[in-house]
Length: 156
Image 1 (tube, rainbow, N blue to C red):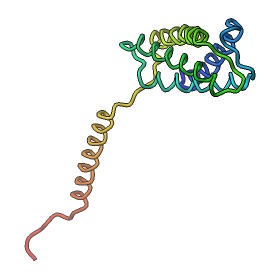
Image 2: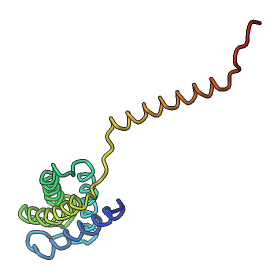
Image 3: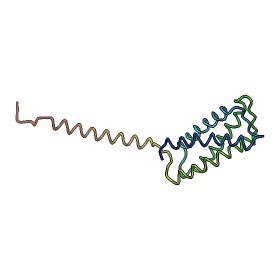
Image 4: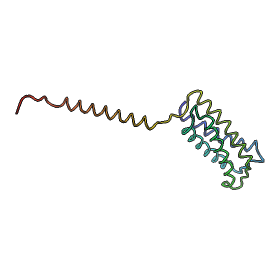
C-alpha cells in the first residue's frame, strides 16, 4: 500500500470517529461547531501517523494502540477548554478514546498482517551505505588516475 493511502485512511477515519462520538455520546461529548470537531480529528490523525511511524511494529502493537488511546482521550478532554461552547466530560473523552482505539487497533492489525507498516530508516544503515559508497568512489578515482598516467620509460 502506498503511504498516501495510509494517510488518507487516517484523515478520513479518525475525524469520523470524533463525529460518531458526538452522535453516540450526546450527553458526554458536545462540540457546537463541526469545524472544531474536524480540526480536532485532523490533529489526532496527524498524531496517529507520527505515533505509527515512530513505534508501530509487531513487537509494539499493543503499546502503539495504547498511545493512540491516551492521545485521543487527552486531546478530546483538553479540547473542552480550547473550543468555546464545547462540553466534554471525562467519561465522554474516555469513550471517544475507546472508539479511536478500536479503529486504530484494527488498522494496525491489518497493516502488520499485510506488511504495510511505515519504513523506518536506521541511521546505522544509512551511515554504513555512505561509507561503502565513499570507498567505492575512492577506488574508482584511483583507477581513473592510474589509467590516465603515462607509463614511466627510462630516465630523463
